[in-house]
Length: 227
Ligand code: ADP
Ligand code: ADP
Image 1: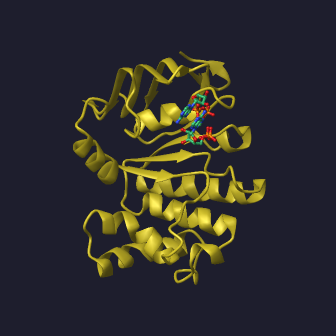
Image 2: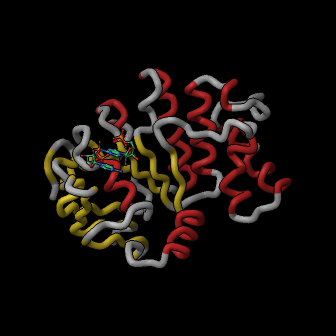
């Protein structure tokens, strides 16, 4: 059965409906791309799957457990322990070095500084960032900053990595390098990836695509509507 599942999600922002009965199942270990036009509800669906937003109706299940009805403290612990995040603009903390940024999820879950930095360090070699450990985000190129953000998303070895337009701020070559690294690292770690993108070249890295239109999702495989 699915690792992560949305069933009949509806969610409105005031009078604006963002989701209107969205269903989506994510299998453990897959890389899933959520595609669709701007404003169709992709980010809202991702945020519901990640336990960041609570839908007005419907259910979100992770590992067979309802997360939409969980108490916020429990849900925030789940996000911290089981989920990793990468956003469009790396959103690194500018006051921290690259290495401290990567270590941040570990520090926030109580790992001691020395151990957290030791766990962060190998990611620099893995993602082609050797020598940049001490830089601050203002001293990194866009592609470097996004690879640091990727390392931060994976350092706590999440079950699911959520990536919202992770290449949206990058040129296409740099974006492809980030996608290559993201997919390779996720496969090595056995991490499931849920990715939002409007770029077909980025979605091509996924095992499967789902398309969101007007707040509803349909699953595509091999270019045909599967369900
Ligand atoms: P997508 O990711 O496909 O571009 P979104 O999920 O961001 O779509 O948005 C879906 C709809 O919900 C859009 O009409 C958007 O303007 C609206 N929306 C999203 N987030 C908010 C918000 N925080 N407040 C008000 N409206 C929002
Ligand atoms: P994307 O759809 O690529 O995530 P957006 O620019 O649509 O990017 O949204 C960026 C942020 O702004 C998101 O957190 C979203 O929830 C919020 N947002 C989107 N549309 C609106 C809106 N109409 N009013 C307020 N916030 C919005």
